[in-house]
Image (tube, rainbow, N blue to C red; front, side):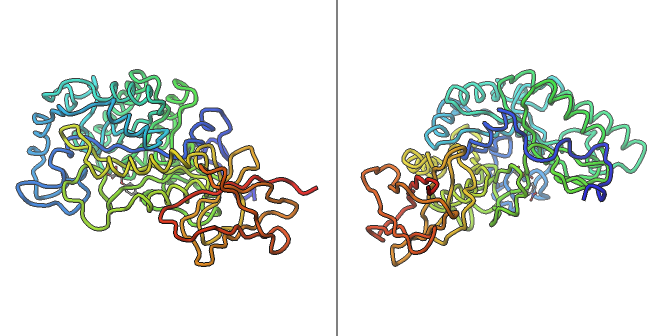
Length: 442
Ligand code: JFZ
């Protein structure tokens, strides 16, 4: 009840979803790409012949490596094989509608020539800005760009995990100015980008900056109408992150679905969200020795289908190598996802939760603003009969296989508003889509 709400100065600015065109565009993306690229891509999870067991992009925090040795990687950063057009072409073929690119990860190394630190690509042998060619190439390929930015910055002597002394507080004030400068710099330099993806915001020093972060967010939104910022940027005045003290989402979409996907629509509370996913277990930056289970194309497609069926987007991570090339395993996954998308994208783009009871054969999506339902089939029952329950007063007017419109199905109504779609074969080896055109019974 309204009466139970506490009044907050730095809580959520809105209840419910954003209703503007920029957010509607984000919501319709369906599939995105994430790119983690930086100095950590050079060692790729190995140092002096030893393997680091953590995430490759965190190697600087390992005691098997000295900070100065890590920071000296800047003198070896020379991605001669980097080809922004080729990266964008691979993402476009995969079917990605947006890409999130690390402008600066926790190590603090900037892929753009920031005026505010020398720890940037400008000090490397490569010298040139990497963000501009990426933004241009992806935009040219029709893909929107979102800039990843880590607040936590291990390279900056003013960064603090917590503020305990007067000196900490003085240093962190400088750090806040630096952070604001860098963010405004990014928005000025790359005016076509659509959003900011924040990370490294969990430590006390930052969590205590509710007022500063709130004002900065407002300033950035003024500067760039339509700008999209997730729930991982700021905390409210009580230190609550993602959801404020009253349980309201802060930011434009829920940014907590990290390598996990909700199972039911109730878990997303009517909010926008996206899931960011790695191909191996928990490796974002390039790791030469991918260990453990490596997800297959069909597994990734199932995650994509599940996300869209629950009103989310699915974002697949790529970790390019230090030389600027993309590993062949990622390129072949992208190609296979793209081959499937070429046939089935209609069931992904501009689609949402269908409001139907889930069935074990797979996932339903619905084209926003229409009565078109898609059945994304991943598990074919031995009977070949796919159960569909529609709302009362709704019937199937036409059912056909996406990409093969001549292959139509005659649904068998087994009871009111409950039908079987009978497959002609149960020997399918890959996921496929059946379109249901529905109509209100008269
Ligand atoms: C962070 C980073 O530390 C990591 O290197 C990578 O960039 C990833 C995308 O983001 O890692 C996180 C952040 C949040 C959670 C898990 C890992 N979380 O909320 O569960």
